[in-house]
Length: 166
Image (tube, rainbow, N blue to C red; front, top):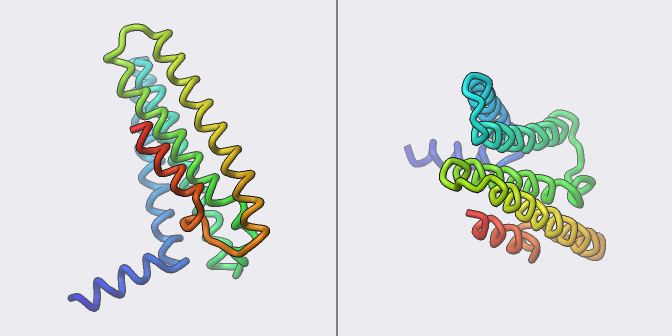
């Protein structure tokens, strides 16, 4: 039993396992996006609009990763060619989804719609500014020396930003 679990988790840590994980992710996030969008068309509640866009962002994030891992697994694409842009794309889309999810959950509670819109614009601006700054610093770092994004300070910045949004 332990060996089977070890083998399964080892598989999930491989490129083929990542391809499998993102295939499942695209399926699940797309279905959730469809369900929320259909509920929005019935009720026209604004929080469903934000939820739809948030889960669509998560679907796009999984789809981008799926396409990347498809080429890595089936055409033996070198990961180093994508290293400068891929980690930040995933983190940025995840942050956008978190912002939209937080706004969707706040929308029914806060009665001042202008305040919600201002908060949305402010949070999206913060995400955009941090993404651009971290991307520029990451490009300088990745071309100077070989490093993975999880060991880079920008990863900690994105993690702290996600905690702040939540």
